[in-house]
Length: 286
Image (cartoon, rainbow, N blue to C red; front, side, top):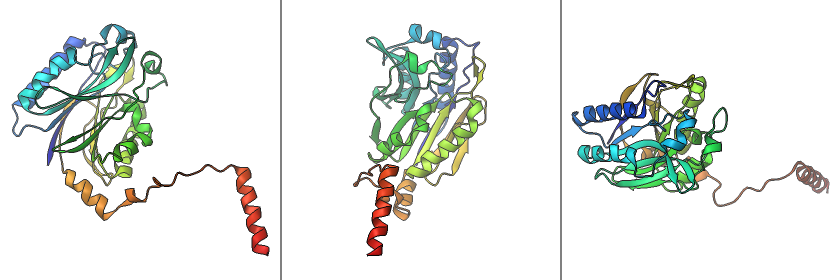
């Protein structure tokens, strides 16, 4: 069994980055005092700067192992837990990325994921940042994990690539708005169900630039059923999942084995379809 703590952080306009850092440390301190300690702790997307504070991206961008990593890494080691430290605006050379950071239980960098699908609708993300080019999966003693960020949820092909790597649990960090709460609910359940995997999401709460965040972080099982779910405000959600259930479901209902992965499907134009239909009639007449 895997115990997960989801820190659904409130990210508001009146808070500074330092304010949020202090809040996160308070949450981590509280988690450290609990028993049992979790195997994974999650934070949401760009919680330090605030996703919609695009004018701050350039000044608050940091290297992969910058101030956010240095804040969270000692806690990962102290608690003995993986921490998905949400995402940062990462600077590498002349490029900025929306980069999720995973820290191992010994306080080192386990890996990172640069958001592949950048949001352009009522957002400056796609204009300011560069897209990632790779998926990120990690085999752990708790199972094989895959990672994605917010807008990625609208692109099922990304998750199929994870399943090709035998991922059993998908972790999603987000700054998803309340205005599209129904989409959020649908994608959380659909991505889990179609991949017969667990999906664990951590969304922001609060309000930035007149955009209210949806909260509603959740855990969904391989049948698409919601195991546990947060409300709209700041809270720490606890979930216990059984990775063995993924393999039980995939064995009893082997839908993933029926994918057309060996034979590429060829597009056929309407004109080609018409010709095939006519040819078929002629043969039938003979």
